Length: 163
Image 1 (cartoon, one colour):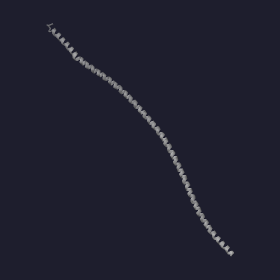
Image 2 (cartoon, helix red, strand yellow; image 1 turned 90 degrees about the vertical axis):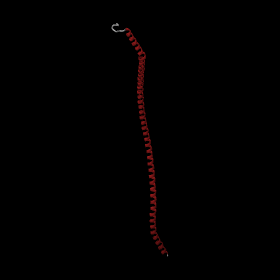
Image 3 (spheres, one colour; image 1 turned 135 degrees about the vertical axis):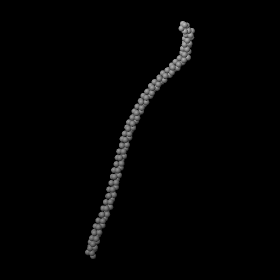
Image 4 (cartoon, one colour; image 1 turned 120 degrees about the horizontal axis):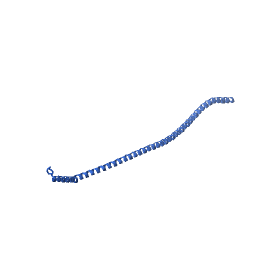
């Protein structure tokens, strides 16, 4: 085969060099790169698992948030209902107090009007008594003058007859 230009020694040396190169590349380059790739893959897997956990936690937090929001809305509605009930109770109480106060004011007004009426009647009676007394005095005075003159004349005529 030497006539063909094939050198067996050189082929063996190339095969040995190729084997040594493959071994060196495997030992020095392939295994470390493969380790780096495996570590990177593991980190990616871990990150994906963590992302899935975060997604699950986020969904849980969203559900909790919505439940808390619904609970808050329900509590707010209850507070509004209670406030309305309290307001109705206070309204009824205020109306009852207002009715009582109005009745008190009406009673006081009635009492005051009765008192004023009685006072006016008393004043009217006093004025009428004064008017009657003055009128009676004038009538009696006028009557007495007429009777007085007549009595004097009668007395004088009786005295004159006796003399």
